[in-house]
Image (cartoon, rainbow, N blue to C red; front, side):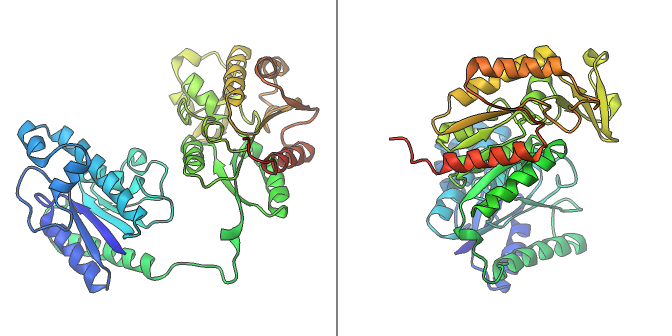
Length: 404
């Protein structure tokens, strides 16, 4: 298997060649993919640009004639991603390394996002010291700041590029394994958690692990929810304990931790058994207090920490969230159960706590009941009884035979 080295050989050919040579010196086979289009390549690539653009359904000549740099980058990213996925499927790819500016980063990380978690992915980028969410997405991509622009070799760029080649060599030469570990043989359950639902998820995880499952816990921060749903669609998850559906509230009210409109759909579409609850639907997340939208100036807020301000959802918002949750749960193709904790949905939604609002919770529960059959427990979401009931219900659903 080879390291896929992605770069634009018309503008970054010297630097790509340097990294290629460093990788080969370390004993690693390398396939160079040329994603350039405007000028001639600095050297012949193993995967030429013609092949890259053909994978995107066009030709290098057509892209060059159009003279649209933005469109060229989009097509190069599409082609690189398709080819990387094919190489991995065919057992020819061991890792991906790329270097570039904004365009090269868009292309290189597109190829990386097409690969499953666990395949080494290294991106040397002029963009790595800024916001990288769009580049990383839900994959395990390592971003390394290039410090100087990737424009020629000098004492800084040689050090950075040499280090990244050594990092790739290190990852491929030493796969960490726990002696005697049988984790790979265990079916995997995904669970969603927030700080305000931690006791519930921790107690439920103990039950699931005792039953022989490996539990992956995802922080419901938008990225966490999207990552979990991506792994479900990748076919890696045997069951979902979706205790903390709070990302739905951020999507509804414009909070900063939305996972998008497709949250709470993957398990249903894939027929994966799931237990759904209403953890932290009492809150919408914003940044520091001064960042909260003016339209919410009269709402109830709670300062979770200096960087996070929580806004209590209203009865109207809770009813809308309940209707959405019920609709998505009812559409599921696989075994699904919805559990409601009648004494509160988060650590700060309990008698005497800042977000305690029985009217709002009742609106949530009522809307869910109208759309789907539920299991109601006279307990708080963080009570051990609720956690264990949720875990046991998921175990029951996962042991059911698949629907014909």
